[in-house]
Length: 252
Image (cartoon, rainbow, N blue to C red; front, side, top):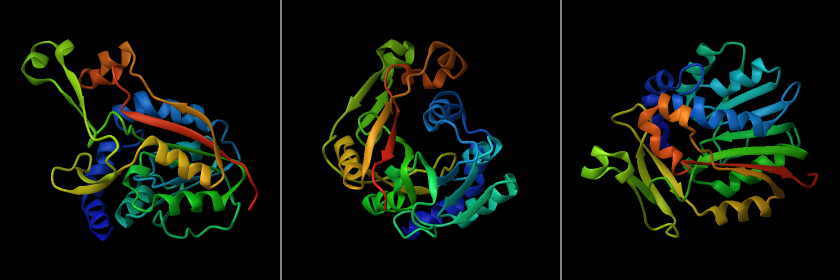
């Protein structure tokens, strides 16, 4: 965990530049529209943006008149978030540890592309359940456990470089849970850990901590998106991200 925090702090500026005010093309054009659709009406709602990174989602929630708070375990990212989005609220906190909020204090929680990076997943979900109101909503996105590294790799090889239709997805070891290293986006040097878990494991933990699943999506890139982002053509064939919406079913 300390190595991950150190590496994220070191890569904070590069990551902030990569994400910018509205997210990188993949988030902005493919994933985030579904996130906002699933999170629904946010006006006057108290919302936690868990592991907010540079705060671009927190800021968009604030602009939609939500009472939004962004948190991240990287002090450097939070400093950049506060500098970039001065009208939003941010704090430093670590998922998997007790969060500095009262029971039943949030209407909605968003965890965008982070849970696969969290070591203590069950402790994290338990805390989300504690601070979320009854009937509150929890929306999260993760790299798709079936179609992203370390389980799957999209390779073009020689024929695929000549013609994209010959590119293939190679999958293996889906049931082998484990810890793997990956490079932080827009960073050539820093690495962070990801924790591969099956979809069933996520669902089991959600159920244990009083969440029912109300929606699930696998974003598919359409023709327009692929034309604008040709390097992402494979996302019209396989979902790179899994997005889940849950509702808390009992009162604390």
